[in-house]
Image (cartoon, rainbow, N blue to C red):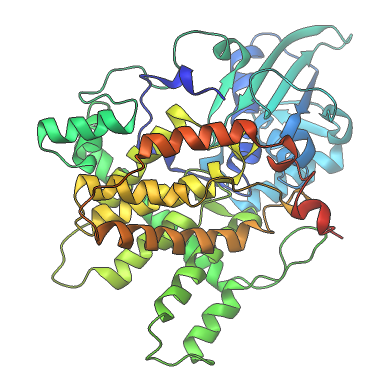
Length: 465
């Protein structure tokens, strides 16, 4: 794993939470950004007549099911994940497949045949990360004009091959006022300056943008999450792919409205809502809809569901606590995983996606509910400790089974982790740093077939069609 190169890099709220499209942050969002970056950095002055994209590792094995080929077309066409709608996706890719052409940056038309110019390389691996892609530009005579390898390291983060070989960390290197590389350093900062984790994170964010901009940005993220929940609950039909999986969120929502089999006195009815919200988001993700990477798309339903649980069922009219603390705290915890382990299913299995999101959500909820710094750290630790070893084996290479239900389970586990931590005084035997390092080691030891390749587990025991 590549954690050492993240030391002293700053990963903030808007690095961990990005508005984009489904179904995958590493296999859709990342490749779209990489294709766009290749155009802007390597082709502006060379006028290529052909571009080839070659996918390796997990991108090859599950790229078709994760819409990586679609992402490549969109990125080369000049689009970025935060600025494209589902309708545009269908229109642009439909034209490319029909005409066998693509307009680079939406301007210069070249021949582009997806089945020939997007190569799924199932044999070779690149050294830095399983999610690797190579873009090559040619002139009309077939002469190579430019080439670059990029790695999609999870959560929509992209680095080039050259960057992966540098000793310096990548990420924003402008030093924030309260830098921290691990949980112990974060706890020490909170103690020394008498600040909460959210306050430390907000001060760091304000080193790069005005406080009003930070808080408005968090509100935009939360609004996008709520919109995704609402869309997911209203959509009907089947998800894309050969399994023809029926959307369930609207069915659950209707049953909740009509009280089928559930009485108002059911003490666990609130968990039905949490399940509903988490699944609604991940069904939208599986359908290629607009979601917030949190910190990945495969786990995008957990944090919205837990945030809405707090918003709807914990605080009341007299509670002025905002969700700012929730998201700032969750981002601080997520940055620790990004720096010291991984948020990539292809690198560490689903513990790096659902496990990390569960840990982030647990910490955010504990903070929003008034937990102390030590209780918040404990909640984050519990959230990951009980996701250690979670494999990523998507059936058919699609972000559907077990991903959608797994988000519901992750959200429920996050709520329980926060409640368990808040019942204690914050003292515990296993630190957050310990569990993050254990998660990193577990990811290294995990067989590759369980790391987003669809070559093991449910993916082979349950045929996709």
